[in-house]
Length: 128
Ligand SMILES: [Zn+2]
Image (tube, rainbow, N blue to C red; front, side):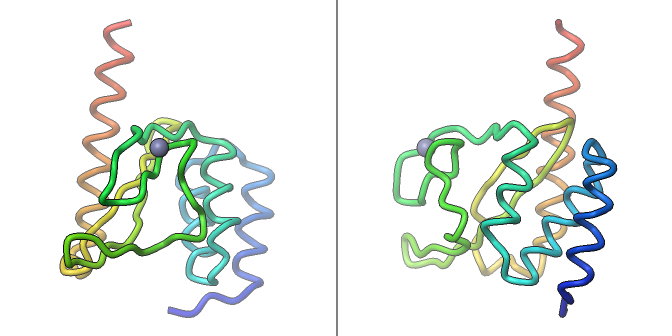
């Protein structure tokens, strides 16, 4: 899929007007990623949303708030190639690595992480 710079600009401009629109933020992030503007894409997420990713030891590069390297979109570990993915819910973002073998099911993986994240955060809110 190709993304023109103008599509990114249009989404970013719209997001500037509606900074709390989470779906729009996700859409703008993915447009930037398709355009190869990874660093901008990641800061669009981490600049506004809380990165819930926990600090993890190797073999996979840590994606927590302190360690995440925006330019690192893939990694190799244990003989597999992994692609970085993210899900957003309730003003939070979670980053994780997805094995390239399941690339065809990436959208489904993303959705299931998203709904698990949303459920967890909603349950947390209720307990307060
Ligand atoms: Zn870390």
